[in-house]
Figure 1 (cartoon, rainbow, N blue to C red):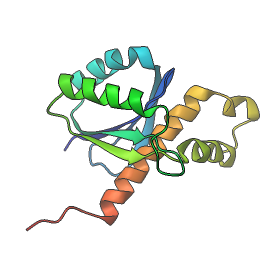
Figure 2 (cartoon, rainbow, N blue to C red; figure 1 turned 180 degrees about the vertical axis):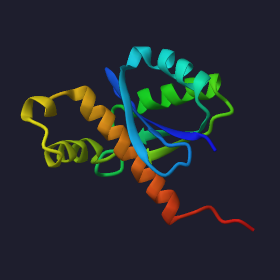
Figure 3 (cartoon, rainbow, N blue to C red; figure 1 turned 135 degrees about the vertical axis):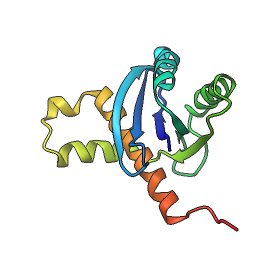
Figure 4 (cartoon, rainbow, N blue to C red; figure 1 turned 30 degrees about the horizontal axis):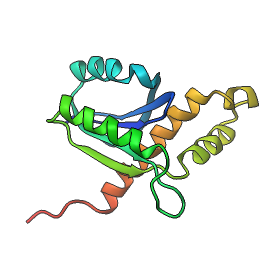
Length: 144
């Protein structure tokens, strides 16, 4: 069984999270500059088996796509061209940044540490992945 890899895609930075090989626990992996994302993915995917790429779906509260949606769609198109064997699934990313900030506060991080946007992006990716994994557990695929 391979890992699940989650992306919180941003204009400047992209947060990345990964599951353990048994797909039970989501962990923050890193944050990379978005323009270096494919360099990172090329290196990571050459060393690790990834079953699914989970991409945060940028939606507004009214369920309309956010301004980042066109960038995310372009990224997904390019990823699918380069890695056609790796399925891509979307997971709602609304509230992930707010939850990341709350997690940082609850974890006792000082204000200066909470202002680290790269850390917020990594935690957001972890929240996206954890939500995706919980959703799969709650709604497993039907087998006939």
